[in-house]
Amino acid sequence: MARFEGVIPSLDPIIGGKRVAFEGPQIDVFDPSTGEVIAQITDVGAEGVDQAVASSLEGFKVWRRKTFRERADALSAFAEALVARREELGALEALEVGKPVSAGVAEVFGSADRIKFFAYGARHMSVPNSGNFRDGLTSFARRSPLGVVGCIVPWNYPLALLVWKIGPALAAGNAVVVKPAEETPIVTSLVAEIAQEFLPPGVFNLVMGNGPTVGNALVTHPKVPMISMTGETSTGKIIYANAAPEMKKLHLELGGPSAILVFDDADLDLFEATLPQGTFRNSGQDCHALSRIFAHESIKDRVVEACVRVAEKQTLGGAFDEETVIGPLVSKQQQERVARLVDEAAALPHVTVVTGGKVPDRPGYFYPATVLDGVRHDDPIKQTEIFGPVITVTSFQTEEEVLGWVNEQEHGLSGGVWTRSLDRGLRVAEELEAGTVWVNDHSKTVTEMPFGGWKHSGVGRELSTEAILEHTESKHIAIDTTRR
Ligand code: NAD
Image 1 (cartoon, helix red, strand yellow):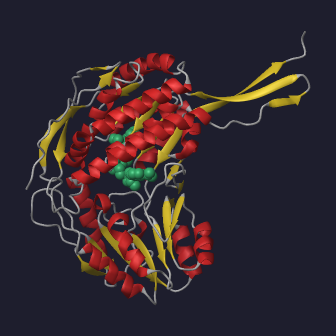
Image 2 (image 1 turned 90 degrees about the vertical axis):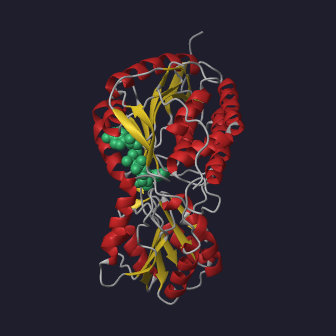
Image 3 (image 1 turned 135 degrees about the horizontal axis):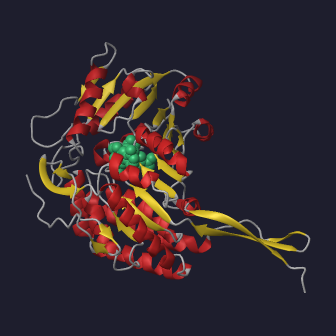
C-alpha cells in the first residue's frame, strides 16, 4: 500500500499569530488507512481557550476597523495561498480522513473559491431601507460583526467545513477561535498557520482538544457571543443547552439522513450515474449522502440493481493508492458503528444484504459499499444517519404515503426527487421538509445558495450571503435632524 510521504505540520495551537505549546492530556491521531498512530494533540482545556479568546478579542479590535475591501483582499490572498499549497493540503486531508488524494486536492480549490465568495460578498450585505419614517428622524440600519466566533468543526471535510465557518465569520469582520475535530486536526493546523501571514494576530486562533472539554469551554465562554458548529444532532443539542445561559447566537449544521424519492417515471440511467458521487464520495461520510432511498414499487428492483452495479465498482483502498475509489472510514469507532447498524438491519427477516455488509480482514477502518433491500421505512437503519457507504432501499406505493413517512422524520437537512414530471418534481420538492432538495441530481452544493437543516438538522444557514448576515448583528441608528 502506498504511504503518505509528506511532513505533518506542528499541531500546537496558534494564539496571537504564534504557535504556543501547552501541557495537558494527549490525544492520538490515527491514519485510517492503516490504523496507525501518526500524531498527537494536546487538549488545551479551559485555560487554553481562555488565552485564545483573550487574544482574539485583541485581534477583533484591529480586524473590525479594516474596510470591507481590506478584509476582502486579505482573505482573497489567503485563499490563493491555499491553492498554491493544494498538493500538500490535499495529501494531509487524505492522510487524516482516508479519502483519495485527488478528492483532498479538489477540496482545496472549492474551499478557496468559497473564501473569495464570502470575502467579496460581505461588501454588499443587504440592509433594510433607510429613510425618514418618523417626523424629523432619519433612520438607517447597519450590520456589525459580533466579536469572537467559536468555530467547532467535524472530521468528514476538515478543510471544506472549516471554510464554511471561518469564511463568513471573518468576512463580516469577526475574529475566530477554531477547534477542529480531535480525529482531524492536521489540515486545520496548516490552514491556520498559512492564514497568519494574511491576518492580524489573534484574528484566527486555533485550539486543540476534545469536544466536552475544549469545545464546551468555547460554548460556555462569556466573551464568545456566537458558536458555529457542524456535527451530530446529539452534540448540537448539548451545545444548544450549554450555550443557553449566555444567550449565544448559534449556528448549528447537524446531521440528517436525506430522503431520496425515486418515482416510476425517473430516468434511472441518470440516477445510476449520480450514485458514485452522490452516495459513495468520502466513503458515504457525507451529511447529505444519497443513501436512504425510497423507490416506487414498480421500479424498485431496477433501482436496487443500479445501486449494486455501482457499489461493486467502489474499489476499497488506502488514501494514497492509485486504484482506490473509496477509502476507509475515519475511525475504528465509525467502522464499528456502521457495521453494527448493518448487522442489526441484516438480522431483520425482511431485509436482504444484496452486496457488501462485511468488515474486510485488513488493517485500517475499511467498510465495503453495501446495498440493503427490503428495508422498511420505520426500521432503525432507515431512521438513522449511517454515515458510511451503505444504501437502503424501501419501496412505496403512492406519493402521499412516502411523503408522510419522510416528513415524520425529525431530521430535515436535504432530500432528493427523481421524476421526469416537472409538476411532480416541483410539488414534491416543495412538500419535503428539508433545507435543500435536489431534483434529478444530488449532493451539489452551490456557494451562492443557503445550506442548512430544518427541524433537528440545524439552526442557521451556511454558504450564500445569508451566512454572512448571520455572523453580524443589526443595529438601527436614528438621528434627530430637526435641530438647527
Ligand atoms: P460530532 O458531533 O461528534 O463532533 C463535531 C465537533 O463537535 C467536533 O469538533 C467535536 O469535538 C465537537 N464536540 C463534541 N462534543 C462537544 C461538546 N459537548 N461541546 C462542544 N463541542 C463538542 O460530529 P462528527 O462525528 O465530527 O461529524 C459527523 C456529524 O456531522 C454527522 O452527524 C454529520 O451529519 C454531521 N455533519 C453535518 C453537516 C451539515 O452541513 N449539516 C456537514 C457535515 C457533517
